[in-house]
Length: 84
Image (cartoon, rainbow, N blue to C red; front, side, top):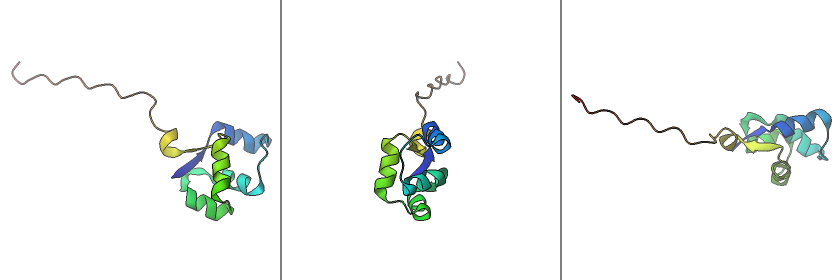
């Protein structure tokens, strides 16, 4: 799982509006949309509960979910038969 800060997560880093532990804040700082959860935990000293708390607060998201389309792709028009 690749983690990324949400807009709320970016704002919390700027204004410190959420009550985060030092480990949670360190984890949030290194979540850049390129590192896996394991890499984030290793570099920040965070534990799974810290990451879970960031998810609960809406400060982080899984890149795969955050970038998923919100609407289905339009259907392609049917190809016309040759010689029609």
